[in-house]
Length: 185
Image 1 (cartoon, rainbow, N blue to C red):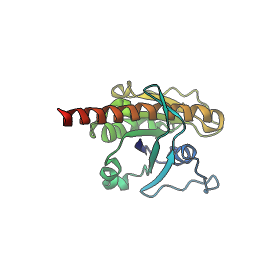
Image 2: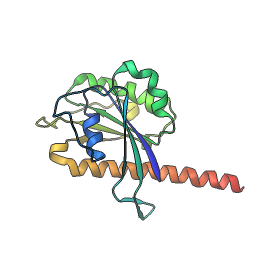
Image 3: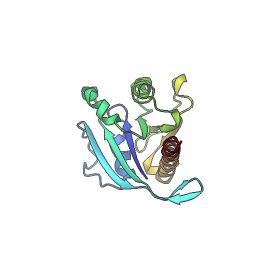
Image 4: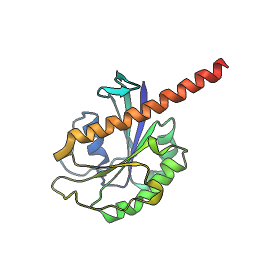
């Protein structure tokens, strides 16, 4: 199976760092911030996933999208044939919390995606407190929201991503089964 996952959110929220981590890609920035220009596409195989009580590996196409609003004309192309969306923000920046509504409305609601096709990563930079209490907009309360810190809990971040990916692939599989049934009938 193959899944196209779009990673979106405000600038400087950690999207590229998380994308590189999940794809086991090398970060060549040396720790300096270099904003993504448009989109970076990383392709990799997932770890072992549990799907319908079967172990499987999926092909993942991860689109690390710029958070700069000047690329908003590209957003429809980012969303073509998308399987799931990861919204990343930095909970230590109040402006990011306020932007969650915008990202959710454009990339989930307007695209007709289900909440199960979305996960929110509150990404903490190294050596910052995770005690931040974030007020998630009411329309997003059913979306899985996890706090991430790659320095201290990288295994948990990967586990959260794999669980999300399993749900997304389950939805893809269910949709394919329904399409096949409708053809037969």
